[in-house]
Amino acid sequence: MAGQDTWLALAAIPVAAMACAALIVAIMPLLIRYALARPNARSSHKIPTPQGAGIAVIAATLAVAAGAIALFPTEPTVPLLLFGATVLIAAVGTVDDIRPIPVLPRLLLQAIAVGAVIVTIPANLQIVPAVPVWIERAILVVAALWFVNLVNFMDGLDWMTVSEAVPITLALVGFGLAGVLPADSTLIAAALGGAIVGFAPFNRPVARVFLGDVGSLPIGLLLGWCLLQLALHGHVAAALLLPLYYLADSTLTLVRRILQREVFWEAHRTHFYQRATDNGFTVIGVVGRVFGLNLLLAGLAGVSVVFDSPTVDAVLLLAGVAAVAAVLTQFGRPRRRLVG
Image (cartoon, rainbow, N blue to C red; front, side, top):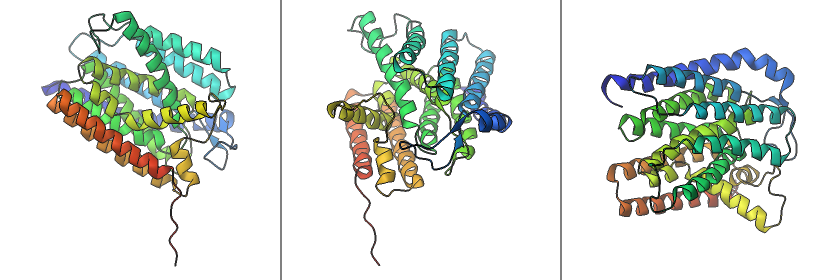
């Protein structure tokens, strides 16, 4: 994207923010009446709080992105199935927010949505050309399904999704404006980032409303699509660096729970960010550190794109892993109390 075309991406951010905020205000009475999330042993909140603001986030994202893509002067490359799959996953999340769906049917519906999007990728686009296309696509389906769910798993603290999604989407918009990311994916990232900004005031600690599965699951799909496009266009290291904190926290937690023979598909409070609040960190302290970490990871991703060198990528990935490990270690230890 360049010249006069950049205004579409830049305009999409505030338009989506205002649209999302207005929608949240409009639907809040319904959420209070029909979608209260009541505290339980695994919750981070203490009082009943409405959930379902993801309806506004996803509606604003899709509407603004579709409008911007329609105005873009080149042929759209985003498959219509991506928007359809987003709506399907949002619908599954809506039902699950009201009446939990058993894990296998839920995963099957998610897999159908994810698989439908992955099969639309042109055969000439591969991350690792040496691998047969069908093998890479199968791996991508599993990876995308995991990413969709890990975004949902990590949405367990006020402003947590905001602290993750805003740096990632803004970095993706920057890459798009620099011509690194396809224009349509850039517009989706801009609209999603704007919608999350519009949601942020309502979710600031102590939150007045939560995203719910109706928001976190499709946010995972849209973010995953944009990151996948970045990887398919030759910037795998950047695509890994941007969500590295979420990937590490969720994956390490899953592996630990499996090794401890826990029922790992059930809700819990053992993610690093959840343990941090149990260890004496405030909510703002946790999300502030995550936000700062994500800004650092976005900076490393930017350096990776600029140099476009395997050696530099390896160094940057090591630096990213070290930074994430430092934060996870900090979250996993009780805070020292000052005496006096």
